[in-house]
Image 1 (tube, helix red, strand yellow):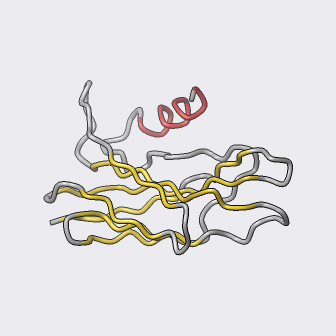
Image 2 (cartoon, rainbow, N blue to C red):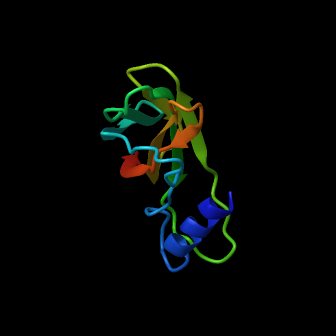
Length: 131
């Protein structure tokens, strides 16, 4: 948790929005998604991800996504965050969020390596507007 906090503090300390937030930093050699698609869906944010080609013997445990409003960051403001996971291909989930906001979705995969260790890929971000 400290590495996660340290990475985000450096990215967001002087930022005006959470656009650069990292949902995951790479741990144990995890790979980023090959592609992500983030779109407005009825009542929410739709997140789709394609996994990368994996090293021999690795398996995907799940896709994870963190969705954060892009409201201005200032002072001690707290923002409601949203999340989802999907353990089944094609890794496609919709998260209910309030309309009238821009959001950033930070998406990554969790893996099981050949030696039984969990690996987390670095997240990839995309923004979307929900009317």
